[in-house]
Image: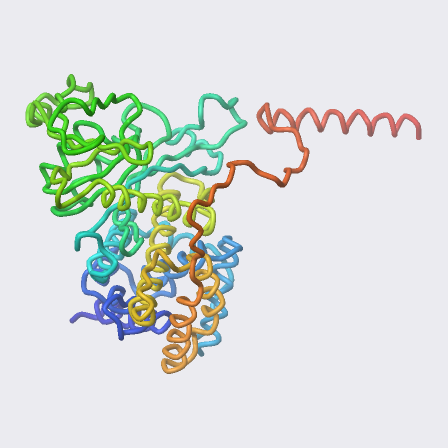
Length: 471
């Protein structure tokens, strides 16, 4: 083993003391210390011994996005204090070395870390958390706003409904998440509008790497297209979706399975412009898809056996799809990814990757807590408060720089405390999508800021001239 590998392993061993426990099947220690996780980081780039190694930079970046103050100054200050407390040499408070270290992190490596943590936790999820002893995956899209810079506007333009200089670049994301562990398994990023930027297009980029045989896929009514359903059947996976509102289901036709329950035959639509002829020809001319209506909602699925999978059971499983909305809310609102802060397209994509990596690590901690301390209560990670877990983690983080025994005891206390924060079960809860608290009554920006600034300066100069004249 050469000196570079020894140094990388030493850094990993050192960072493990911050958040580690090795007693559970779903263990943060096992995942962060896995050979694949270490390989991704060790192959980031050639580096010499320095303060901001790839591993150290990733951990500081994670703490930065989890902090209420997300500035680089705060991140560097926290890292400097931790070094002093742990008896290491003092470092400069200059943010330059840290920002350069973030720029050196390869974008593919960050995405690989997100996939590694997500899939590792999903693979080790307890069977009691699964449906039909199969992995359930949730798909959905959402958007994020980025700073108004020329580079970001060029790659991720603002909506055309907003005046030039008065909006912000908008990015669209599609994520595949695990229902059992709650982690992000894969994601794709693109502009909010434009050719090939829809949710279906982004999903196709990650479909082969995130959907496997025997998976069950849940999505909203936007997703059940002919080609997606055919792709799922070709993979040996199954899907349950709400029927698109434009599709007409006639339950008097097809193979009738029961009341408002039948197997319909879908015909292959005309070839889309984006699809190559060879790919189009590979799809079958017809598909057998089950359609059923329950509680006023029409669902479509590839589960054709009505005796083994009755529609009530499938409808109950489909209700779990709402968990992806909760997860996205946790990422955007609780973690603050709704508004990004980096100034270039590459760094914004890295920032998104770090947010999702931090989210996965929190989800792994929640799963570890449930697998160790929640078995007697049959708890799964979706029943535990995500926000309370972040609060506990941020409260414990400053004290993880002590000795190894202190860290282990504190980490065990944190796991025990996590399962005490159970999400309230409020069936039938219905809230209007309105805001009660009024914003401050400032007018909206309708012209570029520099024009408004020049106008204000001319007004101020005119007032000063009047003062001078009076004097």
